[in-house]
Amino acid sequence: MFSSVWSFVKRHKRKFLFTGAVIGGVYCLGRYAQRKMREIGEREAGEYISQARRQFHFESNQRTCNMTVLSMLPTLKEAIIHQLNSESLTALLKTKPANRLEIWEDLKIISFTRSIAAVYSTCMLVVLLRVKLNIIGGYLYLDNSAGGAAAKSMAPPDVQQQYLSSIQHLLGDGLTELITVVKRAVQDTFGDVSLKHSLSLSELEQQVGWIRAQVEGGSSPRPLTWYMMADEESTLADQACGLTENDVLTVKLLNETRDMLESPDFSTVLNTCLNRGFSRLLDNLAEFFRPPPGDSAPISAADSLSEVSLPLAKIIPIMNGQINTVCSETPSYFVQDLLMIEQVKEFAANVYETFSASQDLQK
Image (cartoon, rainbow, N blue to C red; front, side, top):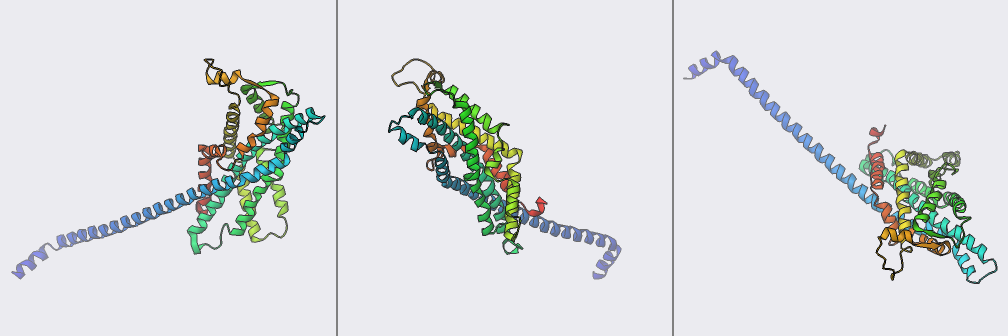
């Protein structure tokens, strides 16, 4: 029996060899496919975990941005009031001085200037901190992801502190220059308007629009970004000599921030914030232009607002108090409106995405 089997094998030797090769090849291919599928699964799982980790870090970073904005509002408000102190004028008016009309004229300019400057500076603070903290946040994510494998930190604590301290420009020289420009525009718009002259809400909105046109238009000596960040020449001059390694990293961060501020997307986001901010300001003012409760005339809310006019002397204290709403720390509905703007969220995500990506991808 064994001889017959052996004879059969010898007669079909090639077939057996071919079949064996096929079976072996299929087996190897199967093992190879399993290994590849396992590698793909592990890679996809790793990518999913990495994306989830980055998303969690991004969301945590946005909460930090929001808290930082709110924590800085009292400082911003104090800086504005320090330069535009209407309270001293109000106290002086209570003494009924001989130059009462002159004091009222000064109060008129200061009241409009400080509330309008508050809207500008608060919007700038929101978008500037969004840029700065998402640049830092992106680099911190890369540092944390690299762990001990990183040759050096891209944003060590000293660099973070030095970089973030540049926000003082907005609260110092930038704010002073902004107030000067806004005050000049307010003077041009309201300087010759009598205190007895009555204005409706729509007329007041038009006047505010003229002020914005002067501040943001070609007559302004500087772009809006200058109020947020010192010009490049000043920054580099301050760092001209004796640059340490941390100084080099800080200058790099500042230059990257400046590039972001000069981008068309940033201009769009800032303009969107300003439009929302001034719309909120006018909404607040509208509460004072509603007809008396006893007036039951059957007219729409919009028509009723346009029907009501107030003397400028009555509008001044209303406008003067708006800084307390605009720069209110808690609850700050004004700032919450700005933080919830979709373009602000998208821009923050794009900045974070750019700076949290691998450096190899950025080259």
